[in-house]
Image 1 (spheres, rainbow, N blue to C red):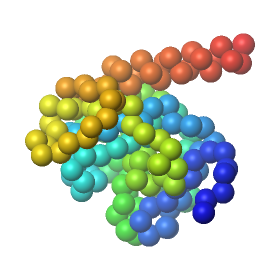
Image 2: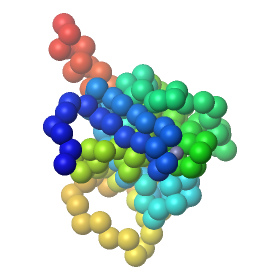
Image 3: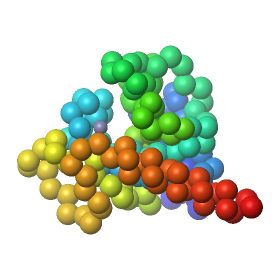
Image 4: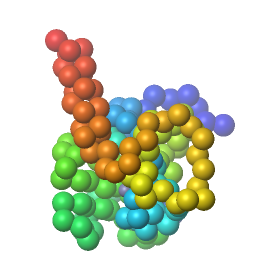
Length: 155
Ligand SMILES: [Zn+2]
Ligand SMILES: [Zn+2]
């Protein structure tokens, strides 16, 4: 059984890379785009977004793989698991595949991004917001909202 413990922990498939965050995700989202399907090998991907410096990877993330302009992705050098992604259009955020995270059971996605690309036979009967294309606007809005709340707490 898992201990009740504050924060987020996770690891890649082989365990060579572990991650830890004291902050909760800013937002958790499915992504139905073809890129995310290929990166994860799954019919739909799910990611937790964190503040850029909120997640500590051990060992630290090395060199990124970039096949699309403005998108960087990191993979475990031993087992190939996707570890993280960063997008120029979502500044100050880092995206961690939900499947790596030990607390995934407690982190239901709040959004479906790129629903236009959803596989026709895939049925997910939740009430999460569905966005036909990129959710970058929503995701950026959520981030700026959270940043505002955080600054209000501090003030
Ligand atoms: Zn690994
Ligand atoms: Zn995607």
